Image (cartoon, rainbow, N blue to C red):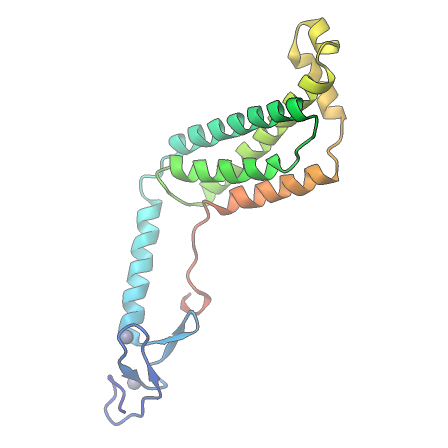
Length: 193
Ligand SMILES: [Zn+2]
Ligand SMILES: [Zn+2]
């Protein structure tokens, strides 16, 4: 069969979108499949339009509010369950990361971008710190130093002086990676860039 663009040229490939026969010169790969020049151009235009739409009207304030609310809510729930169960439940740091990343994404109007990723990462670190502080305050300082002083703030140096253990670090990293990944901008397939 002849190439759709080059009469007389042998067409060993067919485009997986339009199924037209194409020659070696016309063939490109998209996700490992053969695609013709005109479909490739259409695909590029669609991807570019989607990027542009995602960069428009990013609701940074909404993303921040939703992410912060998620961080505080998960931190509060986490500390409450630790008080009830007496287990540290480190995996909550992972859930907190995913929850914050998702809410930053949704709160921004389902947008993506580096600034939203960085916002999510900061909120995750603040949320995990808050959770550890609440857990420390509510389980170790309850009825002792902080209550005696009448201020939970006094417990904070105590929290900072206790180091995070191995599992804490593992789940903190899991949460950070997950939350940072959710609002990331999808990139073009390697062969198109
Ligand atoms: Zn095609
Ligand atoms: Zn051709």
